[in-house]
Length: 280
Image: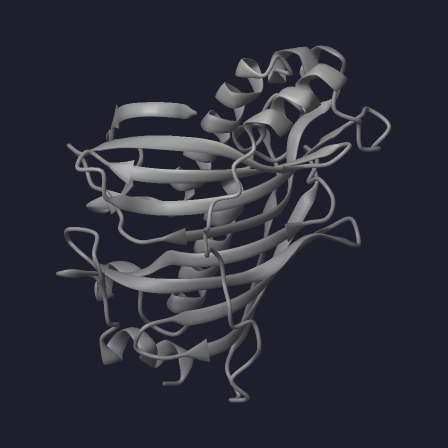
């Protein structure tokens, strides 16, 4: 099902000349709402019953190219597998020429006001099952171990306030990669440089592949800590283990791979000064 059709990339979705990595998450969320409404189990109906609609549980995403302003984006959303309370959706994002921009695979569970997973309504579950198409998609991070080198770790904290929350009084899905980016930018500052200084014809430290597991929601007025352990650094990839915690428990954990891209959004190699803050 086409959930976004020829959407223009707009100012406000960019970080420099290219789309911000969090925008891919936003397009996924828009697409989830569209397909949920089409299968008659909408976000509005779940929110009206004080539920948390289609909460992400496992998210794997890979970016082939970053679009820029003036381009258009379309998203095809396809059910992959359906459980009693969960549904796995595949999101395929393409540009105006039909070339792939990014692919995401996400498992969603709707959560009741008491925190338990809600069973899918019989009609919606049956319709989702009929629409399933197990497409061959390889997405996310594939190497999740440390290189064995002594590489840096860093952390920062965020107060979850009104700009960061959405209708369920939880931190908005799009905010999590932004928090990780801010933490990385603060680390660069501590090393005596900045992302802005290192930019030029190349755009470093953009999300390339990520595999995150969502364990518990992040609530309004909580303090969210983001801990980052650098696992590997080379000219193609900076791999970081992320853990998001609040109230003494882990909310999100996973691996993020950052890449470098040129002005047209194509992947390129990091320059040596871009790797220097990580001891390389």
